[in-house]
Length: 498
Image (cartoon, rainbow, N blue to C red):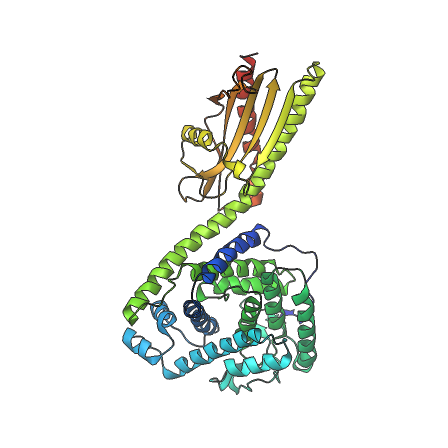
């Protein structure tokens, strides 16, 4: 008989210092959160409560679905989120939810209310509160499915609000046994977790990183016989409330990624869980931002609004996810462009200096958002994009790098511009163009003469939101080839006029 491969339990560890997680995605999340804060600030108290209650209802429903406590089909979920966790809502919708499930949903909802009150009252996290939270979340649950030493399952009594008395290791689908904290060490480990949380809470890290750390370390201990996932997700709510974020909802659609991220965290890599939490928090922020500020009259109208919200929500999420990814990619591309343009500046300065032309000035500049100068070349870039065969979208990321060569009273300017390719297509492009004209205003009149624009390339370097930074970096040769081709043509134009 083959011996079962065991993944041994390890004591909880503090949040590693100096680690970066989620990179540019956290910046994009903060921008979205600022919009969310402004949006809520413009609403009445009642409107803010209505929005928050809908999000908490969604969290209350989904947290039990993740653990298989019940199944509620998606359409009914929308109605319950919109109108409340009541028998009336279920009956009007023709849904199938028994009284015990409704009682469990209400228990979840009230438990989340405990967390909100906990933060509002500025209480300090303690093991007694964790036990209180577990008791509230599991108040309708009397038993849980346990496994004996022979691998047989049976229904065991659930002692609510008390640490486990027997091991609750998990046999994973690949046949390995994931070990959690032994019962005899739970008390000490939970004390350590609470103490470490106080240090983590005071650390200069993103709240999303702190939430991921607290969630995983709690799950790593698995202090209760059952209900650990529900408590862990409630603790995430505690962090989100403390730092004024929208409630983060791990839903049925992200279950696989959620489990995989926890597995990676068990291996010592927290980054996947942080990234998932960033995406889910973005979803929650966008959801509260897009939902109607007022509560509609009548159940059917409310449900219709909620359904419309969900459709718009998911579409917005798709656009937001693509935009976040493109922002990260575009900053990498802009950085590569900036390095290339600066290198060419140095090379050209050397060429002119070697020929005794020390008075020839060569300047390089790169502008990316939020600097408004990033759109100085917008009209020229739109024309270059048309030549390259796409529509230039300036609603998202945009930027440019330029190289200027001044010889006597003549200036050549070669520009590479970044913008969206197509309306919301999830594609970005780099195009090039040039212009040639007087280096200064006319001495006689002081009038500025617009330079003559000319094409340098008829192609574009394009990249998609589905690519990684590594993918785009691997294609940097394509980008540099485009830039080299464009600069060659620009220098040829200058040569014709000197």
